[in-house]
Length: 236
Image 1 (cartoon, helix red, strand yellow):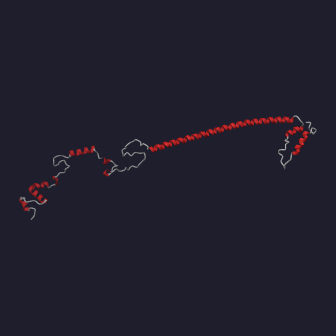
Image 2 (cartoon, helix red, strand yellow):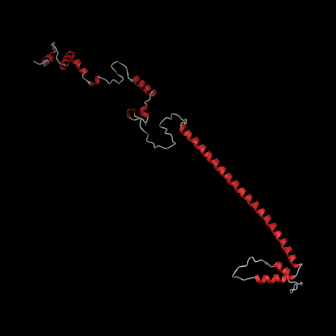
Image 3 (cartoon, helix red, strand yellow):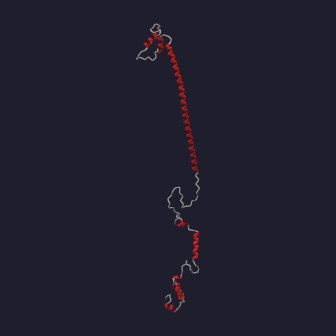
């Protein structure tokens, strides 16, 4: 036996009163009860869009759109406008090249204060400064010592030069006086041979074997000096 009523029953307006076993039977049962009014619920245009102004409750959707626009204006989506934020909120790098000393304006600066140097760097700088100061002082001391030695050497040179110059002048003066005295002695007094003997070295120094022998000449001069009767002994 079929669960659906016969077409004749629908034509005659007979509504089955038995139990309905499935959803299709329930749908057919509702159509049978509504009759001609069932066609009003079968068209799609009878169900307007929920976001329209003609909702089933009689209210329009314009006020809801205005409230939504106000909320989005007061609380913008930060992730949608930030180029450094990828899908899902992932932070990505910027496409601009890295330039030393140039701050990337895409990221807000956290602080403009300079970072404090570590203690190790400070101690190293202090040691370097002390070492440079020590070397400068040592270099200046050596330079001053060299200058002092040079000045002392110059002063000593001029002192020695002046002293030697004075001694040389004095020695020359004495030799000149002795020469003049000896010349006067040879020109006066005694015989001619005595004056000649004063001008001649009669000692044996300078005599060398194998060379010209002047000893005989010296002996001759000595004998003539002693002989008062020698020729020319009486003077000129």
